[in-house]
Length: 203
Image (cartoon, rainbow, N blue to C red; front, side, top):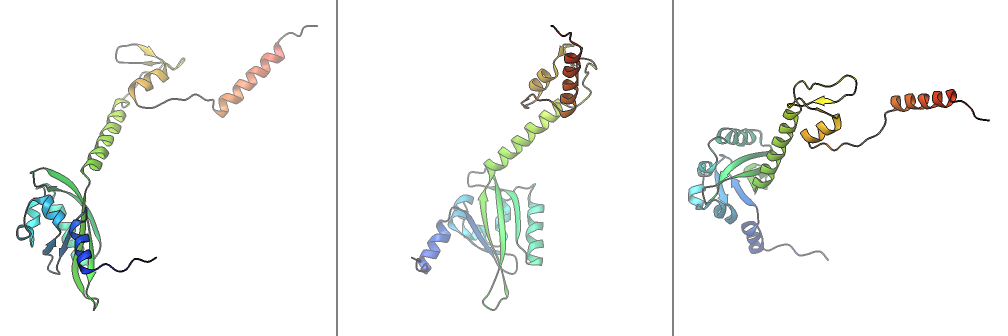
């Protein structure tokens, strides 16, 4: 059964109580609406955020890039996405993913933008932590590593010779499994065949 269309009051409640931050801007690029979630997140009034007041909450290091993406999108009337840090009501900067979409009047005239934002701080920090971990692993394995050309053992910083597998396991997160490559397999089979051929036969 198809549900009936929402009433004006239901639409209003949906927008205001949505778990995402919602904003709207007019054709002059000035924001003229923020939902309750946005205002609650910021700890500011509609009057304070109105126009370009919201920019005051953007982290100083992100303002230039944030405003550039915003204004460039308006000029082209294209959808935009960006990440920036926005100050929360408690003074803590949180990473925000902001997506803006142009909207049009009934006569198909450009009327401004509607945007939605979500807090991605935890996701961003987890991604950066993973990147740092990978960089540390790569850094650990960088440089010239002394390796024996006969037995293929590796000499570590304490001048101790270790098996290749042991060294890699201790200096990275790699898990090793053992197998045999086609070339070695063929060589092994030939050696086994020669060994059988040269063994004396017993009567």
